[in-house]
Amino acid sequence: MTAPTRAKLADGRDLLFFALPGHRPAPVEDRRPLPARAGQHTELRFDQTTGQWVIVAALRQDRTYKPPAGQCPLCPGPTGLTSEVPARDYDVVVFENRFPSLSGTGPALAAPGDGFVSAPGQGRCEVICFSSDHTGSFAGLEPAHARLVIEAWRHRTAELMATPGIEQVFCFENRGEEIGVTLTHPHGQIYGYPYLTPRTAVMLDRARRHRKRHGTNLFGDLLAAELADGGRILVRDDLFTAFVPFAARWPVEVHIYPNRSVRNITELDGEELDAFARVYLDVLGRFDRMYSAPLPYISALHQYADTDSQADGYFHVELMSIRRSATKLKYLAGSESGMDAFISDVTPESVAERLRQLG
Image (cartoon, rainbow, N blue to C red; front, side):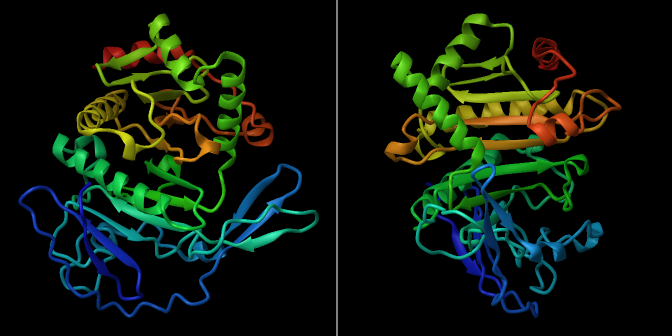
């Protein structure tokens, strides 16, 4: 894995530079008068009706909101006075979020009891900047640069998975104001949760039940079924496959699977990482060509720890967009938000055909 150049921000947060071959990071001193981080704690509260933890992070009300381009905190800050990245330039950088939903370390969460149950909001929230180019995008990265982002994901996944009290590592990107993005600079986030998230818990439960019934991996069997059907396959090579899933919930939804079963991104070998970068860029490029403006999307890396309880997990990426036509958005209203019952306005097959034509 790529060894980053490490530095500290003015309030003690970690800052890591990942560099392309031949590039040498040169961070400068962060001289901003940042407030102390003491007292910036968040809280977990347990919802007895659903069996799920809710993160209460009131401090995020004060996070940076749509600053002018000239005041972007993710652009390089060579003076050490203006940016979260005090340097003249960078390739890929990761730093602890100044307004985290989760922060701090501690023991694993105890099993919640009855009544009002709360716990410290321990965990880790990081920001990953894909490039110093404020107007760029992941889809516009050169393959070697995209591969460097993937190396940064691998490094952070490995380090956070080894951190006491962290149960799940989630790398993701929100792209576009329609999704709720408040900083337009191309970036993503990395969360280290102190619990298994609800979606992952449900998927693992389904996978365990599938193995008991059939003796095989649920995700691998779904990939094989999609390949046998063929109607929703977008891109495939010897190492990775991208497809629109049979029961897609979002107007545009694409899943990217390695053809070999691994639990997380750290288990991919060099050839697989190269293939992942190629297929990922291919799919994002198709997204950008769907309409006259770039497609807003969420990219979610589903990862599983090397533990018996997560043994049936299968690393994959789920890309999803709320844009259902050139002029309309899909809002998660009553059925979706109130009942978690998704209603699709388009057929997965028609979306797959449209994306294939954009290749």
